[in-house]
Amino acid sequence: MTTTTAPVLTVRPIDPAVHATLLVRDDAGRPPVRSVDHTGGAPLRCCLGRALPGDRIALVAYAPLRRWAAETGADPGPYDEVGPVFLHDGPCPGAGSDWPTAFHGAERVLRAYDRHGHILGGVPVTPETAEAGAAALLADPEVAVVHVRALHFGCFMHEVRRA
Image (tube, rainbow, N blue to C red; front, side, top):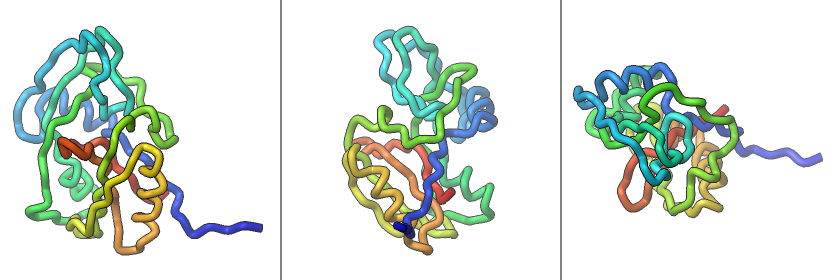
């Protein structure tokens, strides 16, 4: 019999209720920038998929750590960042429960945060090592949440927690 101490991961796209509020006013207090993705490919944080050609999308400012902190009672202080994310401009089919492999076609950085919302560290990963990297970070009991971010632009991709 084989046992493992690695945590089971919960991959969390932007929550549908939050998605709906962001389509009215984003986390910077502005209305979304709406457009049509004519060529497809915009990374959608509501379903952790890519826009199809012709999809209506919205670009909004999103504060992922602020949203997590409101849920958990943490106070991230100066670690509270706001950055751009794409969403479906309207209803979204949602995300599956598996690691969104197709969503991660490039290098990423995993940022680990403690229970207060303070950064503990970051680890660059490839698409092939991202899931295992997140599991390794969450195996540390000091890590409360992990953010997956684009390596080159720093944009938030999605959150990972222990199941």
